[in-house]
Image (cartoon, rainbow, N blue to C red; front, side):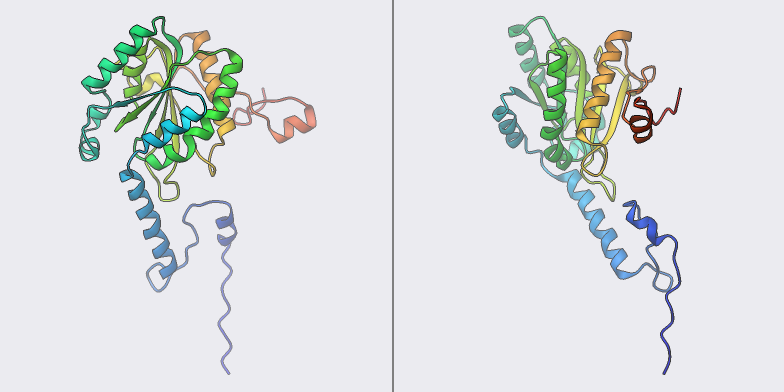
Length: 272
């Protein structure tokens, strides 16, 4: 009887337990195995669905209301999803009705605020649906302890990152943070991004913003994202700027420093 051909050792297989990246997929002749190909097609379909998923702003506003948070619903200058995807520039500005609504709110509540929190569907409403409330719960607990004053949460349909600059300028906010669904990847259709801007105004480029990316259960935790955002807020107020000149040097606990020396430090920066 013919003996079965032994399966060759593949040192890459052990690495598949450590990453969602598509490595060590194997092959069938000159092609991918059927299972790997089907998994790729499924992930691709999830990413496409995330881009086109409708923003459930009514559900999010209801959840915010249950937590005692007021909210405002606005719309960008992009009239629908098709135009939003074809015209990024329209997603960066509010439509006329939304501008009027914010101006009226600012007149009723003069004096400005420390922080305007803006939530937009971006390229993954799925990310916003899953992670906005859990993140805000962690963040606002710490922000309240620091005494930050914030405006009602602003929800923007068909919004891009820069639309937060117009929102912040109209509300007279010292700074804005945009919570937005990031461009889906084949292993991360629900990644939430945070974009922080000090002294927001229309016309700022990305060089004036700080980004905290990949906020989700499989990525950056809600607590760590909140910790980093609060660090940026404090440093921005101290230095009166944000963007490329404001580095994220928030201290985090590392196992070695915490247990062996009792000190804390940023493990990304190394020992000083």
